[in-house]
Image (tube, rainbow, N blue to C red; front, side, top):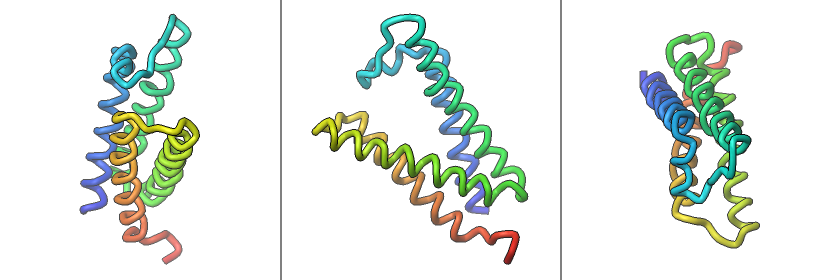
Length: 127
């Protein structure tokens, strides 16, 4: 039950962020993520909008469908782990971490830790 609740919350969080950025890609300017034209707006909508919405939908699917749950938790582990490690390495390469990067690391790190805990608590089909 706790895993389902976490996944529902995570899915809604990612989907809501995706919708927000899809509708207003310029909202990311507060974090120094800016577009200089239509191509940039399209990319922000695709990656920060569409992909985040899809990630949220996948997570919600895992919350609702027991047969998907473990596979979705594995996918979440890889995607969150990749994003988290990319931010850490990127900030180290840049020699700084803005407040946005620190917030994102805390948010993604917490979700990654919770995902790994849920994955450990979710039996595989082979068990």
